[in-house]
Length: 62
Image (cartoon, rainbow, N blue to C red; front, side):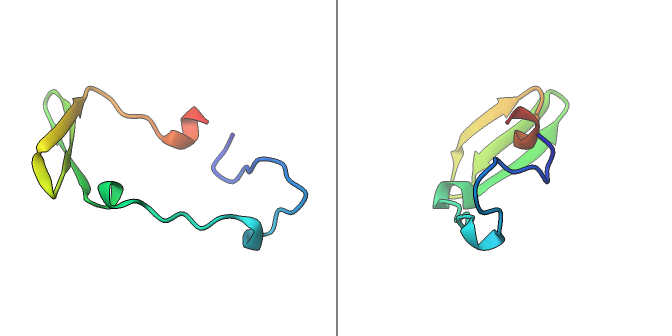
C-alpha cells in the first residue's frame, strides 16, 4: 500500500476518517541515533528506553 492508498470503503471522503489523536506516551517519545542504532526514550521518564538496529516506516509494513 502506498502512502495515498486507503482501505476500500463506501465513502472515501476525509470527513469519514477518524482523526488520529496520539496518546501521551507517543507525544512524549523522542529518539536519537548512535553508532549502534536508534534509541527511543520517554521524555517524561528518560530511564524508559529501547534501542533498535534499524527502523521501518509503518506505511511500509501495512
